[in-house]
Length: 443
Length: 127
Ligand SMILES: C[S@@+](CC[C@H](N)C(=O)[O-])C[C@H]1O[C@@H](n2cnc3c(N)ncnc32)[C@H](O)[C@@H]1O
Image 1 (spheres, helix red, strand yellow):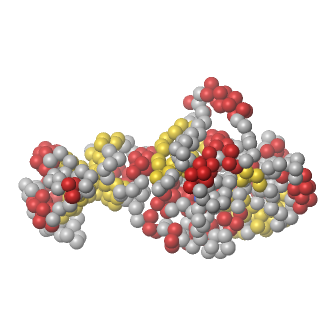
Image 2 (cartoon, rainbow over the protein chains, first blue to last red):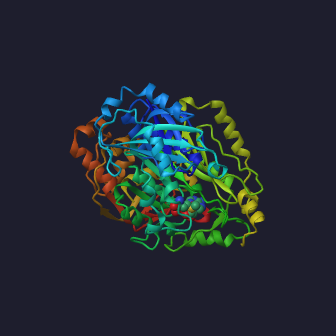
């Protein structure tokens, strides 16, 4: 059977990644029949109406799903296709309380014009009452118009579909988890929409265990917990998770949303000196590592141990004091990306996913290469564009060991040996470099 | 910090990772809290093969729980025996260390736990 997915008009490059991930979560046999990033209408194939409802129920980027009744480049073609494909369905809706709707993307109709189009469907033998407020069945005519069709005086849409409404998505969660209404946030909290999408793409689901090694205020763990996963988080900055305590803390956020059951733990730790055992245990790893835009990325250690022996001494003497703050040194963003992949390859279960955010390029358009690892296969790359820069959400799947190429593993190990480890955050961080040169931001 | 989490962690010092003595970390002066949580059978069954059972037995006895069997229960056993499931749930997810220390059996380093949050940051000589 074919269905129409109507997407919200935002985050276009995330749409297919999200829908395909939800098909994996729900174990659905999904085929995308027709999709163009330029249009919010997507036609997919699924075995049943029930499957269509399951596919959409967690989606953030879809708005709704509809049983496809017909399509065409013109209204006449649409009618032909409805008459050819759906007569066997008509009797079911003979007495149904129904209405017709129009959804014209980039187009406009007068109410008279809408009515005229709707009336062209009068051949459908529907005898039930029409109800605009409480219909049991809604038939929607979707149109796709050219860009600027209204000022250009274009008369007809490029493409038309008609479908019977089946279900809404979970898009209202974006409001439920809106940062403006969250008790504890910081400047780097991930907005609710993208956090929820990240949770979907990384396949968060009941019974699964998820981890965010850069947890901060917990946006990702909360989104994953919403979808039923049990979640863990850590951060080099313990204060970012503790906040001011009680309501104003990462755990407070879990309580605010009634997600206590999805809270595993949080702890303070440097991603590059993690206490995590290296055995497969995570179903998913989600992260928004520091890009070093506002401050250089830091890890535990001394920048210049020879020049600062007293810092080592202080660590030996006072390392156990509860108030001792260990020194940190600059670190390369690229090295951190590699560290994340190595960590993921060692701690993800088979087919588990790691999803993380990284900048696409510095502002000189030097693309920051996507890190790779022989045990991880790229699932999707989604881009969020800002005014002067963009970032991408990259998702990998842990390939089962028996499918990993031994030669690739050896080559990778050899390459890791020669990767240099410099000391200045600027040398090591192409994004930060470009950002400061290009934008002349204060520092 | 939940008992389950403790089972996933070891000493943050890199040189300790390969030593069997670094796992599990040993609770010291630990204050325990019990937090009632709904049982999540799928999650427990899922986590079962990922546990280091021997380490869990050590932790459980160090925290004063009755001894665990030598072998972990199977998923079928847990599904058939509600009490077994609840006991394991209680130990893994409802029991946490709120205050105290976690000590590495290899290097002796102590990690502080405050308000349930453990701190694994290392001084420079251990990085
Ligand atoms: C972009 S923020 C993530 C924000 C988080 N997603 C949230 O919703 O609040 C990056 C976080 O990484 C943490 N961080 C920086 N360096 C780290 C390191 N070496 N290891 C672990 N966490 C680190 C920072 O303290 C910060 O909280």
